[in-house]
Length: 401
Image (tube, rainbow, N blue to C red; front, top):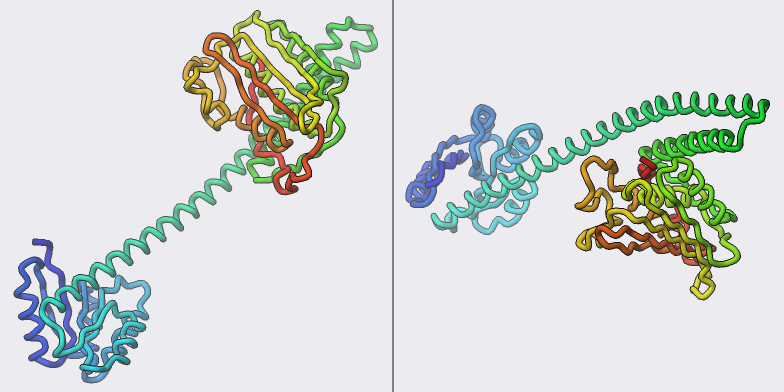
């Protein structure tokens, strides 16, 4: 048998109290503990001292009425209110309606309810209150969790702001010193190799500063709109390849098919796409292997677009991982633990390609390298919604190891 439910009966009629006690004592499934008082004033004192599970209240009471008792109990928002059931006279539906409006879970008509009906009513009322308390507790827990999450986000944003500020300090020093060396070497007629390497350092430092700014903007949910402008994709690709060639760790082959590779694109977005694709090709392939970058015009496509293809001779992607390559935080199961990465770069690249109205997909076989193919329309689609034409959160990009 389940634990006893405590009932407080508020009724000045001894015969009614006896009838209720008798009905509860004969319950073979549920134990009951019945206390009784004859006035609402007494009931308030008892409930304040030790709230029962359910209060059975007669409408007609000496002094304060049963309805007024319900209202007074309901006016105590910080108290753990018990379930409440009103006893009304026969045919008094108005009182029953008022009782329900005043906080009662149910009502019973005197001289018309059975013992079984009484027990079911009291149990259901207790269960209703229990469920309401659980819902309220869950709501309170949700509010606390949301408040804590907002506070944590505020702390995170502050930490990110401090971190980006601290990162930009040494980066500016690097940039200034590289520019100073450029000026000094220009006076002494340096070799082309030294001048080129210094130029790469300066450009890389500026690019890192932009990425830091984008990262900070993303943490503050400040997305920049796409800034479409005329851009020569071949020149952009050539500069990226040239910068990676300077490391001397991989061989790069750049091929182009077609006469023109210009379009209206966001240069920052395309740089991030290239950083991810080229960086991954370098990171996941052995030193000395070849990375092939191919550009081709596609005049026969509906958009008259451009195809960009990046191929490597690296570890490749397992067949079972191919459907998830562009999912955030997913990496191939064959990636060694010593190879760094967050699993967000390709997701970022796909989002940027899609914002331009393009497509990206991968062809790969484990152990035989991977080929990423990007198709970009040269101009914005007429259906491109302004609110969709925004850069996504700044993601960390893969870089040359």
